[in-house]
Each structure stands twice: as structure tokens, then as C-alpha cells.
Length: 177
Length: 101
Image (cartoon, rainbow over all chains, first blue to last red; front, top):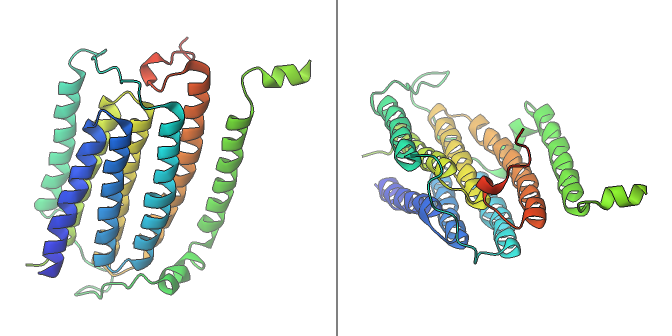
């Protein structure tokens, strides 16, 4: 019962935030909507006993990523109104129909019970308790290679971001002359 | 009444659809980026819900990898947006045609 109440509240909040992201004219309002969605999802993770994921969601997503977004919004200015005219004819209608179709298909699949949830052992399962220790164990044993690759990916991303931010247009040419 | 995995999957499907619609409709590169984040988060929700239903922690481990990829993507993407803004003074994807043949 508690889970049902929590699910309804967080689901409504997450959907409201998501709609705000797409419909808001001001990018800052979009960012706030995304923040609401991310936070609602963190609550859902706690309900599902994914404690570490919930903490990381708040710290990394709602914290770091949203701050980065807001920084860039402030950097490039929010006063410029977005061109809202349709360059492609009937783009909005088409997208709305397509989006609704995608959503309906997935929901229909779920409701019709085509996704069958049977664990390997069969029968009822215990909800896995996602503490730091419990999540670290498969992360550093089974998935250690993937974990190391993510370290490489983050290094490349950081180097790429610095390269993009550092070399202004024409700077490289001037240095060679 | 219990909240089964299907409920979470439905919510995730709705979030993903909204994100996809935003990605296709909006022209501000920043808002498009936020729509991508919405889609990634919808997928994370399915991972957690499925992991719970199957009684395994692998779903939560997958969330971490999605998170890392999302973080890397945000860093590079926002750097590109800033770099483009410095040369063109616009964040609208419709006004960028440098790569047009």
C-alpha cells in the first residue's frame, strides 16, 4: 500500500517534469523539470531497495549533471527565444502521432503480459538489497573489464572536452605559422 | 494491491516516449540534450525494475554503466554546444549547416 502511494506520487511528478522539459519555452524551466524527474526516479529507486543507485542518481545526475546544464544555459544565454516555426510541414503532428504510437505499443506489450518475470530459480524472489557492498561485488568481479573500459571512456571524454574548449578557431593555424 | 514490474515499465515507456518526442520537436540543442537524458533515465528505471523482479543486482550494475556513458556524453555534448555557440552565437540546430555538402 505504501509502495502504491509512493509510486503514484513519484510517477505523476516524474511525468510532469518530463512534460515540462519538452514544453517549456525557457531552457531553465526545462532544466528544473528534468531535475524533478531525476529526483522522483531517485525516490522510486529507494522504494526498490536500490540504495546506492538512488544516492548516485541524486549526487551525479541531479547534482553534477544538472549543475553543468545550468552553467551552459547561463553561459550561452537564455534570453534568445527559440524559433518555434515548423520548418518541416506538420512536424509536430507527425511526431505526436509517432510518439503516442511508440508509447502505446510498449504499454500494450506490458499490459498484455508478454514480458514474463520468471527468475532463474523460479518462484518468488527476494528483492536484492542494493547496498554499496552488494553492488560493488558483481561490479568488481564479473564486470571488472567493463568497469575499466568506463574509466577509459571518462578519460577520453575529459580530454575531448578540454580539447574542444581550449582550441579556439584559428588558434591551431596561428601556432603553426 | 502490489506494484509489479509492469507498472515501472509503463512509467519508463511513458518517460522514454516523452523524451523521444522532445528530441524530435525541439530545436534548442540544450533542450534536445535534456530529452536524451530523459530517455536514458527511463532505461535506468527499466534496469532497476527488471533487476528487482528477477532478484539480481546486475540491473543496478548496468545502471552504473549507463550513468557513466551519460556523464561522458553530457561532457562532450555540452563542450560541442559551447564551441558551436562561440563561432555561430546560436544554440539552434536548424541554423547549423557547416557540414552540409
